[in-house]
Length: 265
Image 1: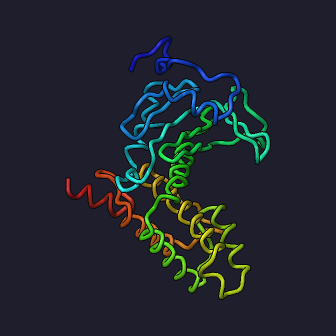
Image 2: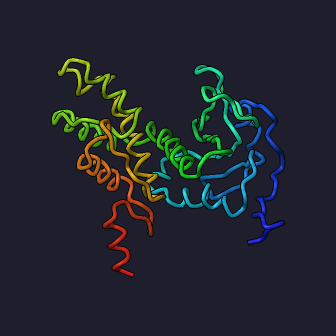
Image 3: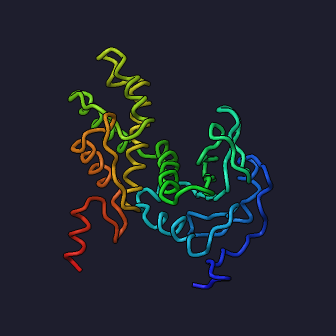
């Protein structure tokens, strides 16, 4: 490892630096020529300096953990690592800024999506890499929900209908929890189809897929709590996602997968 005065050497500066404040829609267009390729699907731009050896944690390792079946459904993706992202109001466009915004204006990720490409922006200054990983996979899952084939949607909705029939409590994250509560306030006959059910299915798929992808990449713990779906039902969801999107070679989903790999070595 090379260093200067005992500090890790930073990655070489790229062609331009982001202005003090620019909207993400403007930057998504302007930064395309300055992107650095990771592979034929992903490239990146550093709007905030990242030590060269840390790029492995921010880019190469999480990208390498993406299942082939997921990668094949994604558009071409550009990743922008920014100091901070600011959104003054919920309906305004986010901006990249160099000074930390107030907590109610700070956002940690945002996607600018086109038909065949997407630019993902992330706040990285003062944020833990583990938290960045969560938002990275959450944005990928968000891109995937509108791109999965009907066969996958149908299988996921069948599983949710089984859970609803069994009155399974809880969800994976707040987004799907809120949708589930809205659905459960509706009459029983309307819970298994229609727009409220499809909205719930979309968000539960995104939240569970985020957890699944994050777990392939990193050693994470699922927090228990009164809103958390029981582990046996979460396991069934993850098994379904494993069948749909098998992990890359050398990556495990469940602890026994890792142990099996170790025995085969």
